[in-house]
Length: 296
Ligand SMILES: CC(C)(COP(=O)(O)OP(=O)(O)OC[C@H]1O[C@@H](n2cnc3c(N)ncnc32)[C@H](O)[C@@H]1OP(=O)(O)O)[C@@H](O)C(=O)NCCC(=O)NCCSC(=O)C[C@H](O)C(=O)O
Ligand SMILES: [Mg+2]
Picture 1 (cartoon, rainbow, N blue to C red):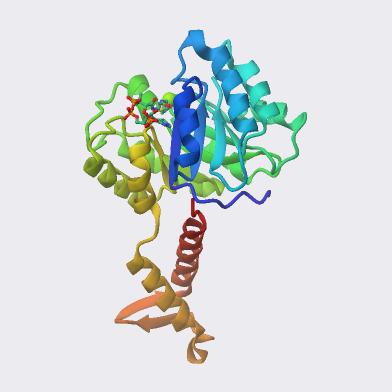
Picture 2 (picture 1 turned 90 degrees about the horizontal axis):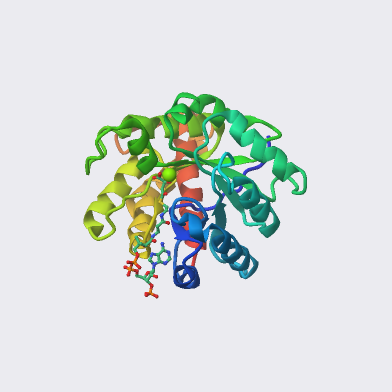
């Protein structure tokens, strides 16, 4: 299996590729990742100019900035193939495929990238936002374990899921939660990252912060965003808390004691702690370090 990049993906901001002002703002923003969007945020009349701006934006990237992902139009659309070729040539960190329905959809894009790009230099991300994608999610995510595939991340597309299924979009997302949990489960089975969907209301940041916390508790690695005001709350929610870091350090220290060297299970502060908890603690500490490294 390929080694997938380990980067913090707490805050992943969509930026419409046609919007020069928004693109110009990116260097001042503290998000972990930007998705330069050629798809739903761009009107049909602007698709070609948006593609040009995407090229210029990616070409101008500096050292140490956020991870850069380009969302192309669906390969079945009139713009999809030209977008994919332009994105491949621009060489962002990853290309995000919208409206993926089957594993074959991902493999088709994979084949196009294989024509020119070395594996592990350009990744694929997949939006999970259609009923068929939800039904095929096991096979899609299994590509994460496939030696030849570039798939690195699943992204929940809650607006399209609402549109395509007819569920009511309630503020607490109660009808979406089962599908969101499926996305997390499938991502873990495939060794992939999973990103929560957007919240369209960018004015109520308290509600947004609560939704970020919910996504974190469901197991997502980060949240997709639509507005710069959402970056801070997402970074906070998806960074391990000081208490969680302290607990993880205590577990690491306890297992490092000579008397515990051969123990599978120990008692710590009145609780049972097993080596699986040590693994969990190490993962949390690695995540905390990744977030710390993102110092922009
Ligand atoms: C939602 C918006 C249209 C609101 O824009 P605007 O009214 O301009 O907001 P503000 O005046 O509050 O903006 C303040 C400043 O911030 C800049 N800005 C705003 N949004 C962004 C952004 N996304 N990236 C970078 N910079 C941004 C403004 O230019 C202002 O700058 P300044 O004046 O210099 O201070 C707008 O936020 C927006 O377009 N957001 C992104 C929309 C988008 O990309 N939609 C598609 C992705 S969502 C999706 O499709 C999910 C999925 O597929 C699904 O199905 O769920
Ligand atoms: Mg969508």
